[in-house]
Amino acid sequence: MSASQSRRQFIKTTAVVGTGASLLGAPAILRGQDDRKVRLAVIGTGLRGRWHLKLALDRSDTEVKALCDIDGAALDEARRMVEAAGQPKPATYGAHEESFRQLLEQEELDAVVIATPWLWHTPMAVAAMKAGIVPGLEVPAAVTVEECWDLVDTSEATGVPCMMLENVCYRRDVMAVLNMVRQGLFGELLHLECGYQHDLRAVKFNDGKQPYGGGVEFGEKGFSEARWRTAHSVHRNGDLYPTHGIGPVATMLDINRGNRFAHLTATATKSRGLHKFIVDHGGPDHPNAAVDFKLGDIVTSVIQTVNGETITVQHDTNSPRPYSLGFRVQGTQGIWMDLNESLYIEGRSPEAHRWEAAAPYLEEYDHPLWRRYAAEAEGGGHGGMDFFVLHAFIESVKQGVQPPLGVYDAAAWSVIAPLSEASIASGSEPLPFPDFTRGRWMRRQPAFALGDAY
Image (cartoon, rainbow, N blue to C red; front, top):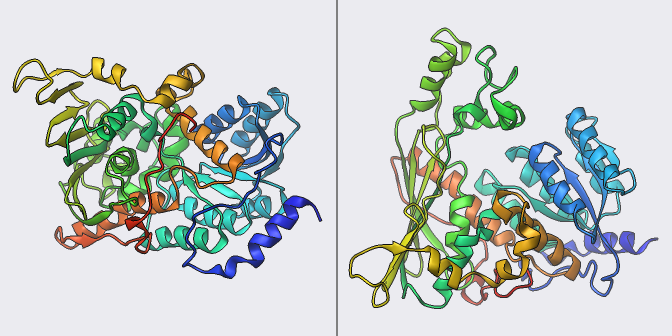
């Protein structure tokens, strides 16, 4: 029996530790074996999956062993990328929707990147952890409260870490502001704002000839996503994509590490933007014009933490607007807002009650991670953020430790979606957050981006 088979069998047979496991450590998959490459698979080889694949192939410490996708063209393109990088031909899977299970059972792997449609994220991550393979999954990690618990319970039971690949936590200005928060520049934090405000109308729809999810979609990204993403706007009304905004805010507030989300209330506007877009581009007789969209154009959620801070989270993917995550950090000593690229620090800003440019502060407080890896991150996707999130995933696997954004974070950030849906459906009733840490938040210490390692 190989060392990897022995490790996998050990993980399976010791899963009886149960949901009370503390997750203080992680399987020492590569500990003491720094000369061996991380054996990686990619499930989901669309545009996002192939971008992760490119970043992995750019590294000298990863070996792509297997790929999986039911889209044969995407799978072939990913295979060609691996071979073009000078690596051996990877095993490929994709005969049917459950082929990923064969990959996880048959391949000797250390980690897997999951970049599939949302509804597959949790089932695939759970299967990976049960197979003793560390999953790095795209956002959101889960779409229901039950799925959030499935991720947590499986990770605790198996001892296998799980990382959600939330890249916005690594945005350069956001990390500089995190550095400023930790150094007390804003005083004690009071209120933060964030969101996902991104015009995705052309992503959700096609060329005006076929019903949604069919035909040739608008744009390269739309071709990959409209086949599955549009259905969420038809059937769900809530903040469907919260993690890009809430992730950075959660790191600033030490959520799950001395603080946690307490309760949420959400409300939504009427739904008009998607219907108007269809009529404007396809005419009133287009088949999509008869679709009844449930998703409100602008969804606003308000969260309170147990330490007394408030957070406003907005979701808007149906309106004509420039892209914005709408960050605001307000403390007893000052404020930063990304929309106007400005801040005000009482006692330091030159004029009372006057904004000043944030750029000099962002340079002064540039995070050590960016100072160390800026050159490597250049061209790394989303302004370098993609480089950092994959780097953190691979490094944590190599060291056999919990990732900086772990399963408790994946659950707490992703659960905003189903909680907001339930709150809106009940007339904006306040709903409590589950404590996925089972009380451990009170003694867990901050871990994200504390130095310049990853």
